[in-house]
Image (cartoon, rainbow, N blue to C red; front, top):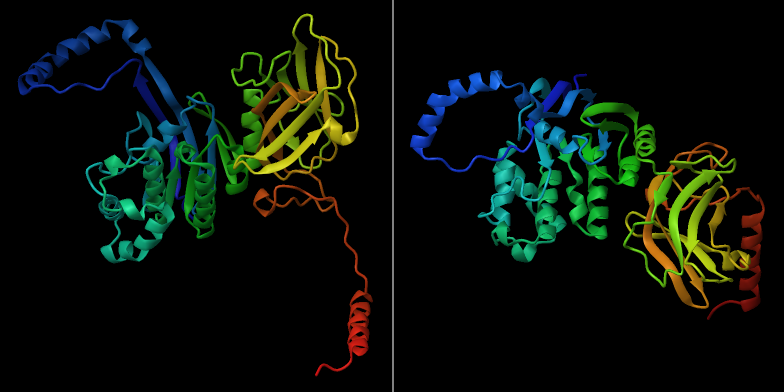
Length: 439
């Protein structure tokens, strides 16, 4: 079977500081054309000119099979958006070649793909035509697109008057519903609210199950872990890893040092600041620093603190709150629940919460904390760090349900009691006999 997407040795070079040319008159264009040979000769004699060029992508190669969902991850500036623009044929590669087999729909950034002067209705049909669809095919999907985007009242309004949220809802609805064989999605989903993001992720899951190919760029490791079968990690324009999504997430996070998160310079602290968390880290039971945890692994989460000079405090309640990336609370843990009281605190140290057999399915979670004494908040932060969990052996079978089946794993046992139903039937029969016949 031929790949749906084939990328061979692709590179893209840009000139640093290059700007889009302003409008020129015909006379200026003719003069520019006539003097171009002279400028090229000067550039050949100027070795510094080549140093103004950078490679946003260099020697990128991979294949995506039909029906695969691939997560494309990497730091900011790694080349992810540049690669999608090349695949969308918005820009051409400097070297290498790409082959796309099937109709391509892309959602790269707010403002791409729609004509601002046309209404929402007109842009739906325009995009369908660009994809090579007939009017009857677009008609069949039209109501579904409008319902998903939730813009019925503004359907006949030019999209230049839409808010960014409305624009993205319509753009995603069009891209996902007009049945392209290949769907390219950038981090544009971050513009929407949590409910919209959940809706979009669900739709991409449906698209994948229909056998269409999806290339998904995201910083949301939970989405990559749950939606994708494979992952590609880009680093400084080069492919660093191609493999299963769990391995890709782990490789990416090991490169960004997710095991230790410094909060010393953060401006998001709340509270008096008399005791302040300056760093968060995660370790295993042997004390080794962890970038990611596995389901069922026992982990220690360190909240490193510092106290202001001359301040003394005791009986602090330290808490951890874990939420999904869609803002669903998973659990809250603090030392009052466990009945463990802290005495007078030293000037600096760490509150350590040991979570036995981490009961979380694979995903990336949001970690918050608070420090409270006598109902006074010393320090708190709702989004202090990320907690990334990959599949592990929580259950004896080695199987871990995905997060869309539930955001918590339960330590349980099953058994069969052969006489349980018999006893229930006997109780019902006895109760009926006692009540007598109903008139």
